[in-house]
Amino acid sequence: MRMFEHDVVLVTGAGSGIGQAAALLFAERGARVGVLDRDASCATKTIEMIQRGNGWGMAVQADVTRGDEAAEAVGAVLERFGSIDVLVNNAAIEFSADVINTSEEEWDWVIAVNLKGAYLMSKEVLPAMKKKKSGSIVNGSSISGLLGWPNSAVYCASKGGIIQLTRQMAVDYAPYNIRVNCVCPGTTRTPMIERLFDMEEDREQAMRKISTMHPLGRFARPAEIAEALCFLASDDASFITGAVLPVDGGYTAK
Ligand code: NAD
Image (cartoon, rainbow, N blue to C red; front, top):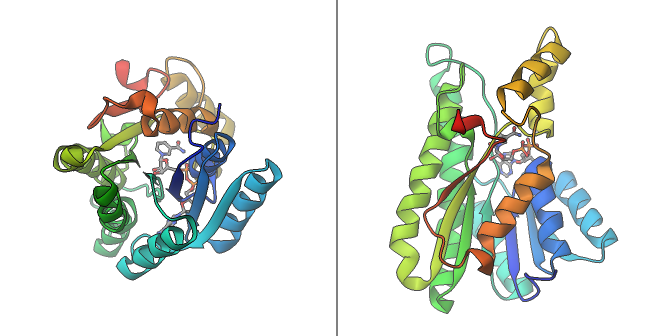
C-alpha cells in the first residue's frame, strides 16, 4: 500500500515515540518524509530506520517554539523535496502539576511547545499548500484535551487549545482544499510515558492502574496512533476536516 507515493510529509517530534512511528509508516507507504526534531541525533536515528526499510527522508533539526527555526526547517524541506503535502504537528512535552504548582515559566514553556509550535509550523507550511490548493494537516492532541486529567493543568490546556486550533484552521482553509484534523491518543507506550512511570514509587502498579482505565484494558502501541494519523492525512479521509478523533481504547467513551 503506497498511498503516499507522490507526497511529502513533514512530521514534528519524529525522533521518538508516536512521531517516529508515524514517520516510519508514512515512509513505508511511499512518502518522502521530513523528520523534524529538536534533538538532532534522534531525528537521524529515525532517518536510519527509514533507510533500512528502503524509504526516503531527511532529518531536520528545529525547535518548534522558534519562528525562525520553523521557517528554516520548512524552507529546507521545500528546497529538497519541492512541496509539503502533509504536516503532522506531533511535537510536545508532558508536564505534571496542578495550577498552584505550575510556575509562570513552566506554563509558558509547555504552551510554547505544545500549542504555539503547531501554530508556527502551520503558519510556515500553509502558504505553499494554499498555492497548490491542496494539503492536509494532522495535529496531535490527547484525551487530556477532551477531559481533565489529574495534576496536568498546562498540558490539558495546551491539548484543548490544539483541538480548537484544528477546528478553526479547518474552517479557514477548507476553501483551499486543505483539511485539518486532530487525533486524541489515550495512553501510549512511548519514552514520554515511560519517563512518567519511572517517577512512580510502584511502577508496575501505576501501569496496571492506568491501563485498566482504558476499556480495552491496555495501552496503545505507537503504531496504532500512527495508523490514525496516516488515515486522516490520506485521501481515504478526503471529506473529513475539523474532526477530533479519539484513539483511546474507549477511554473517553466512559
Ligand atoms: P515523546 O516524548 O516520546 O516524543 C516527543 C518528541 O518531540 C521527542 O523526540 C522530542 O525531542 C520532540 N520535541 C519536544 N519538544 C520539541 C520542540 N520544542 N521542537 C521539536 N521537537 C520537540 O512523546 P510521545 O509520547 O511520542 O508524544 C507524541 C505526541 O502524542 C505528543 O503531542 C503527545 O502530547 C501526544 N500524546 C501522547 C500520549 C502518550 O501516552 N504517549 C498520549 C496522548 C497524547
